[in-house]
Image 1: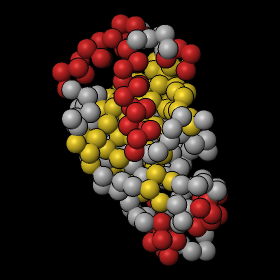
Image 2: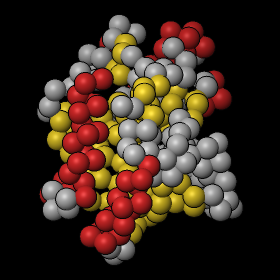
Image 3: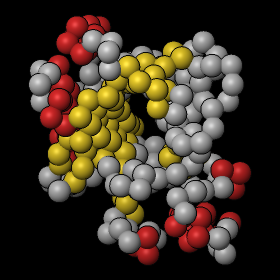
Length: 219
């Protein structure tokens, strides 16, 4: 049984109701949600069945992307995807989900700082519930995903005049808020609501990060 790390876990409704959302869920990390000894075979299956022809570059990240119809063609995704979906349904109280796409991210840090989306604080214009299975240990050098750490009331106090405008434009002032990386070990799982502010972290040159990310749409 995996243990649950609720660093900023839970849900809020009143503070963000004016954003047009009934409820916004905060990120949750599950330790050892996947047995470490299954990670190697999982990697092998992805390489065997999915090949290297799908490699593409998104915002400086090397990924393989699979659309919803394609996900169903690969048995490698069945067990992992259903397990992640069950966590999201349980902890975020979202009853119906459908997978929209899957990313296998295997990236190395470069010599330059990456800019633009997804490396600036934002939330997705289309709401997703995402699950990221760590296929490698991810420390402070690996470019872990980062989440807003403040309570919404604190943020509104810091920038009361600009808060609505900044949120409406999908851009947040990094210098006025604290974003914390979600560090973890191989086999850990992070689930999050993309309506909560987040950003991709910067990787140190030559450092590797590998994750398998499932993007679900509520329906």
